[in-house]
Length: 334
Image (cartoon, helix red, strand yellow):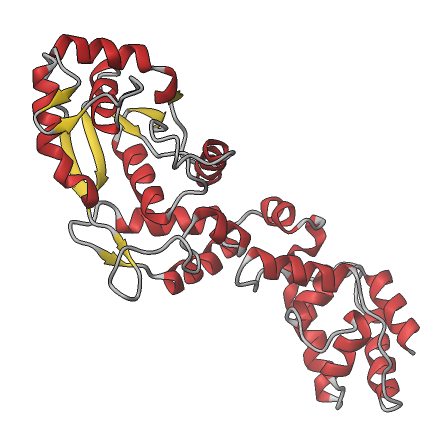
């Protein structure tokens, strides 16, 4: 059985590079430990661990044990240092002056204690590999297999800053990117041998595909809208836009229409009254084509139905709106 671990420091929402490690570990391992590397109190922030758990749950990354907090395991680390007979290993400090373990000791001891077979992490940890191997053997255990992957870089060729657009899982979530799109992007990267440049446009393309693939009930819940509105949401580029489109359907704005709108609206009303209660897309598109063929102004119809001059495809709007509500809005505009 392959036993892996994901061990972020509790410093807030996951950087996409850390999320890459989390997904790679979950996809690779049979058993997954979530560990909080919180030995450096100066870096930890309130709520940082919770933010990471929220990110992992949102991405669908499940753990089998944890979170294990290194801050709660100091006795275990001090015992390991006692077995080594020193609070230093070569030139490396293992225990601080206050008796707390440094990252190097705590990480190796935990990997031994939890039987980790594979350590999958970014190339920035590669300089630690030989030290961790030596320290593991000094503690009487066999080192795990170390697998290092490339880092995610920004446009400047340096490690992507957390302040860059879309650089954290929370930022992507706030931008309305579906979790499935982020997970798909990270799985596309897999375990890159070399550093890769962050491709936010690729994530946005995947977001469109993810929204198209969502079941009606899931998309409705994500947009905070009734399922009947979903036909008007399918063209959304992200979930924030889907929520805006839902608002256009559900919350029409008041708008003053020009006098020449009457002919379009009266003709549309005749066409809609003749059609059945529920329109499918083909019927709705046929109705729009018929209105356009007799000179109807489709922009004026949209204004009458939503109070806005832009929004979902007009046919999709007609599918989403019940017949009686459609006619009520047209009558109000007339």
